Length: 151
Image 1 (tube, one colour):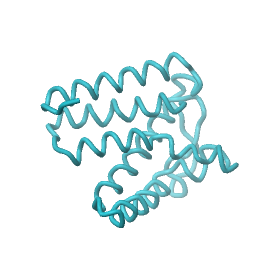
Image 2: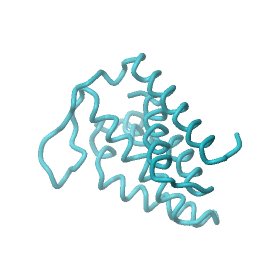
Image 3: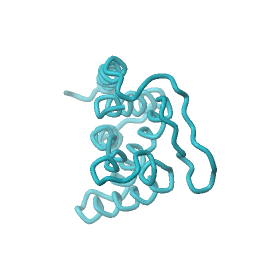
Image 4: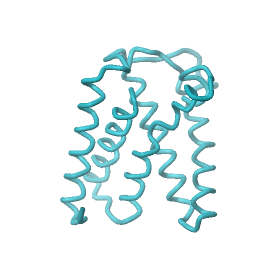
C-alpha cells in the first residue's frame, strides 16, 4: 500500500476498535491520529535502501520502535503511553495491511520461517489505496461524532 492506503487502513482499524469497545478520551483520540500519521514509517526501508519488507516489517522491530517512541514522548513531557501505543499501533496496522497485498514477507521474523501474503490486491492499486483512505476518514468521523468530540 502507499501512504494513503496505510493512513486510511490505520484510521479505519483504530477508529472501529475504539468505537465498538467504547474507548474515549483525549489519549485514545491522540493515538488514533498519531498512529495514522506514522502508519507508513515501516516503509522507511525504501528511503534508506534496505530490503523492502525486511528488517522494518516484523513485530520485533515494531516493539523496539515502540519503546523508542514511548521514550521520546516521555522526554517531551507527553507521557510514555502516547508514544509507545501510537508507534506500536502504526507498525502493527502497517504489517496487517501489507499482508493483504501480493508481496509476501515475514512479519514474525526471526521466530517463524517463511513469507506470507493473502494476495488480495497489488500494493500500488490506486483504487484500493484511495478507497481505504476514504473509508478510514469516514470511520474516524463516525467515531468522533458518536462520542461527542468536536471537529
